[in-house]
Length: 168
Image (cartoon, rainbow, N blue to C red; front, side, top):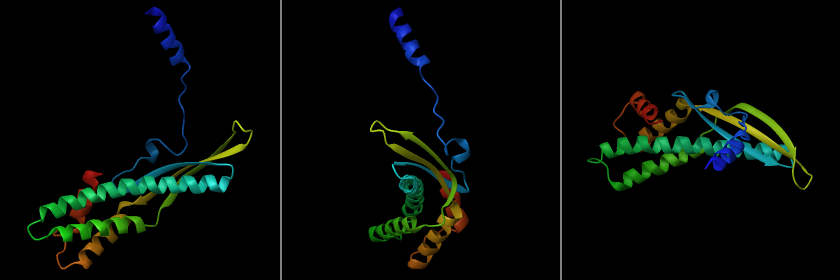
């Protein structure tokens, strides 16, 4: 038993904390800003950046989509007396389309590193963090849903935003 404890301690003493650029508390999402992170690796620096950006956008879109879907579920389920399943599907499809079309991301951190891989090739690594304001996501979404149907969501924008913030 002591031998196992000593072996575990030796392994533990070999651990080192990895500081990953563009991550950590200063890159967490807040009530007003949604943030996403991504990492990309390639033998070409620009390709590494494109991959990191793509991964950061996917991370951001996933956070937004999950939260917006929950907000819509809350309001659509509360109003099911006046709405049918087709209406719900229309709103769900609309929110996906609007979230996918959201632009205006800002890069807030971009760092590069490189290393030589086992094939003796230089590999570039890009770390990226992006952000977008919640109003930049929610206002177009809310306005579109209010214009698209005669059966509008029965909620004011500030309530809609508050529900988003509560869920997020």
